[in-house]
Image (cartoon, rainbow, N blue to C red):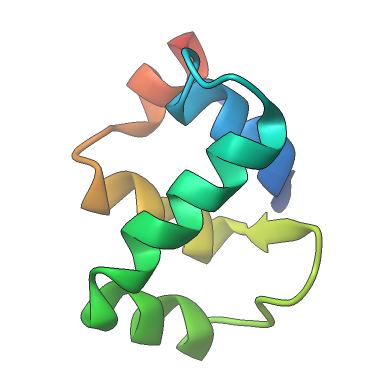
Length: 77
């Protein structure tokens, strides 16, 4: 399985929150979940820029680990 170097935040939230009303609402929910865990927020910030429209591979792995999702499960979503 090939994991891309970056993933768009919108693509990530579409998979993590499939029942969300809109992409904006899903993005807001992801931000809320990250804000609730200061350790995760710090780890994400330490691995790269967060103000862009995408997450890098390390940030993606941290987020998936937080949600207890493996890469294989994520690819199947």
